[in-house]
Image 1 (cartoon, helix red, strand yellow):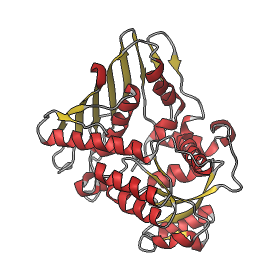
Image 2 (cartoon, rainbow, N blue to C red):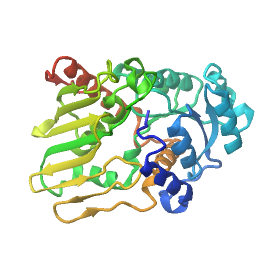
Image 3 (cartoon, one colour):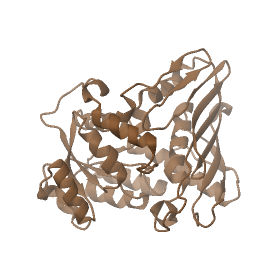
Amino acid sequence: MSAERSSTDPSRRRLLGALGAASFATLLPVARARASRPLGVALVGLGYYSRDLLAPALQMTRHCRLAGIVTGTPAKAKEWQRRYRLPDRNVYDYDGFDRIADNPDIDVVYVVLPNHLHKPFTLRAAAVGKHVWCEKPMAMDAAEARAMIDACQHHRVQLAIGYRMQHEPNTQAVMALAASKPFGRLQRIRAEAGFRGFDGASPDNWRLDPARGGGAMYDMGVYALNAARYTAGAEPVAVTATQEIERTDLFRGVDETMRFRLEFPEGVIADGETSFGRNMNLLRADCADGWYELSPFQAYEGVRGEASDGRRFDAVIGATPAQQARQMDADALAILEKRAPRVPGEEGWRDMRVLDAIFASARAGGSRMEIAAG
């Protein structure tokens, strides 16, 4: 599940102000098709990412709208109903979720829950004929991810993963460089994503619980891993990884910091790092004839960078806060046009395969783990 900062973070407060004030007409790509009505989206899980980012972003979209909610907290349900004028028939608790099958107002279920619940709610949504958007990381492991893909294919619904960065303009520019190679052969990648957090956190926090998918690698490391893959434009063939825990009173059974090295074809190496103990936010590619980087490369606003030839990847004022709106509109349009989304389930599965190898290597003290082609 995407979630990194507390409500007291200054950059997040600026983001929310921009998100509320920005005009969707200037933020979203030009539509290639129009639906007779926007697709109805039900958010499953009403934590801060749904509350403060996805729900406001849905007010900015052209091809989808907030139509329903699923929560285990009745008080939250009432608050959301007042704020978004949601009728009683579009409000569900987790036990009664499957009744959503009979609701024509809801076309898409967006799973925004702790990681261990991504698979069960994706399977339940697919079984009742609803398209699924699922937050990152897609699942707890590659086997779960494959089961999610298979279920959605079986029930003929679309599955997209919430990799918001792949909808961000400067990220897309960097992804394009993997194919055009303006600086010659790619040699090395550096990808870092992390923040200092959880001091004084409750032991009940799910990000500290291994059974629920806690730890830095699941939460923030997926950004670094996915970035290494799209910067390389290829799949890694092997990995070595080590984990580090400084605050042993907090991180019991989950990683506080993970460092990993990915080996790609043609000798390309990617060094990745993620942490709940240090602030880090960098994506850099070193090539035979130059370099380029984004810093920050994953953020709700202000993604920017530069290259050795003087070109700049300037932050697009007013655009980056709409990453979630861009993402959801693009995914809705893919459903309407009956084509694959930008980030299908298979993309999440590819990351999970590498994550499995990273965890295996860390458990084995940094042993090299090969990743089978797939």
